[in-house]
Each structure stands twice: as structure tokens, then as C-alpha cells.
Length: 280
Image (cartoon, rainbow, N blue to C red; front, side):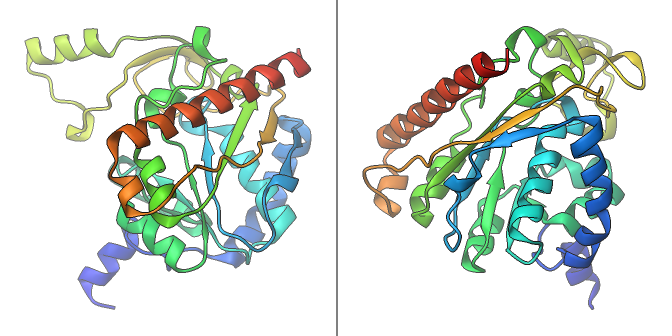
């Protein structure tokens, strides 16, 4: 393999890193966390059609550990098997900050969060998982734990319209209690960074600067990795969101994209409110 091809394989620009045998190897570990640590309760999996591609759209919770995402992945593999193709879009910063951990994610099906890779996954016949809110969502303050927040990121809408696939919303309750985000102090941190001329770690502007309570640090600041607290998680796969029209023209119609974005956010918030009421 040439150095260029090898670099592309290692930095998220390849579909070839996904390793079904590696997924099988980790399944017992995922199962232990699923059954005994997070005691996951889940429903709605009948909304995912057996032989169709879908765009799974989730709300991130619980910091960089994102335990609801991992538990949802376990559910997917245990229900559909490791050979049913699915890829997850992972932020490009992951490969810059921790290439080794990103490599593990790639073996599980993670690819770089870029339209080119999402289109390639769909062309291969796979379904795709995306968490549009990214770090803004996973580190939203604890007071906003019951809120769907995608930070205005609408690329997933354009992707669904271009690929003409339904959106399957994925929601959860409990995962945002696995660490307690006291607040996001990004603006203050950015001002200090500019005033003192201190570069961001690895030269990457994180976009968020939370202060949180959790393991293993006790109290920590910045988007540091964390180990989730053993809080019960409830996940739900919601009914598909289908739009009135699809295709390239629909994906380039800004007003239509905005309307579709609002529809998805509204429906996901309604489902989240119902799940919160049911699990209270």
C-alpha cells in the first residue's frame, strides 16, 4: 500500500477499515456495559426496515464517551448482525487528537464526517449514522439535557434529500447524566486565549469549553475525555421522517432545507418529551 493510500486509510477517508471480526470481539464487552452498567432499556427498532438504507440521526449525550451512541451501536449489531453495513460519521478532530482511538472507531465503522464519505457509504449500500450537534450537543449544559440541539447544522438534511433516504431519529434519556456539565465557558476561554496568546491544544479550536463533574477527574474543564457514571439509559428509535420532495433541487433549496430541519428537530423534541415522561 502506498504511503498516500495508507494515510487516507488511517485518517477517516476510507470505508475499508470497518472490521466485522473486531466488532464481534468487542461485543461481549459492550454487552456487559449494556446489561449491567447502563441497564439499557430500548424500543422502536421495528422502525428500521430490514432491507433499506436509512440515515440515522441522533442527539449526542454524555461528553466524549457518548455512552448512548455506543449502546445504540451494540443494539444495531446484536439485532442486525455485524455484516449489515452501517457507518458512523465522526468529527475530523478525532483523527487529529487521538489517531489510535480514532483507528478503533474506524474498525467499528467510523468514517470522517464529510459529505464525500457519507455519499460513498450510501453508494456501497450502507446505512449511515450521524450526530449533527457534535461537540455542541454532547457538552450542552446539564440544564439543557432534555433538549434536542443540533447547533443549526443542516448538512444531514441535504444528505438525506440528495440520497433520497428516510431519516430515522435516535433519542435517549439518561446518558446526559453520566457527567454533569455545569456550563459552557467557551467565549471566556477564547478571550483569555486571545489576550494571552495561548494556542489551543493541538492548534484546534474546540468550539466548546465546558466545566463538568464526572469521572475520572472529579471536576474538569475543556472537552477532556471522561468515563461515564453508571446511570440507566433509555434509548428509542423513532418513526421515520419522510419529506415531501427529494433530489438535488430540493437539497439546494435553502428555505426547503430549513423547513425540513425544523421538522426533524420538532419531531425529535416531541419524542424526547414523551420518553422523558414515560421514564420519569
